[in-house]
Length: 239
Image (cartoon, rainbow, N blue to C red; front, side, top):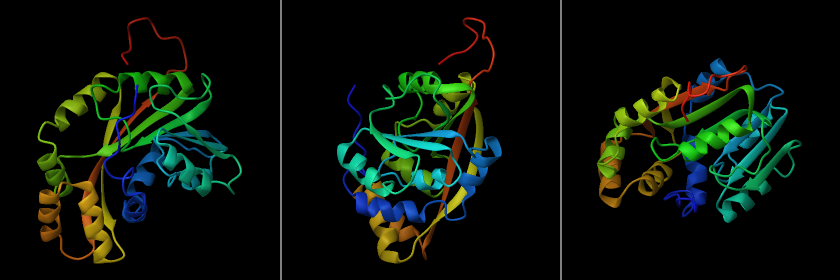
């Protein structure tokens, strides 16, 4: 299955690099994830790692870090980023066919990458395959119910159903935690450039006009599910 092209990082990786630096300026997502799992000494997989921005952050404590990314130019950028990091590597591949053995990692992390509800079942199955018993699948996506960013997101994606996505993950045994944070930019030029790659021209103009200063409030959802450590009765769990 061919990956769905990312409308932002695939086309504007340098602008997206600046966006990554601005996102979650207070570290709220990292703090929420750390409350669910301690990845010190663990083997971590970052699915849809892009150009590897999060890999060095995991590598500070993890025993080993693997990034998987389907877009060859981003694979090359990610490999350059981690070239001097022991225990960190980047592999080409997609969520539906992870290039890793069974039961080989302790944490599968996917941040605004592949997992947006119905249609991601093959990726969920692959994540469970590569997880060790007791390991954690952590999916971070944008909370389209939280203004103002969520309002702009829904304006561009009127068919997107945030409540339906939440029901999808809940039926599959995921816990949900809402995370409130903000994007903080170094300058107005960067803020406007980022909004232009995230939204259609019309919605970007609306977002820029509505945003004063250098910060944007943004909400995220953290969906987490541990892989069972013992036997599971057939039919008792869904992908």
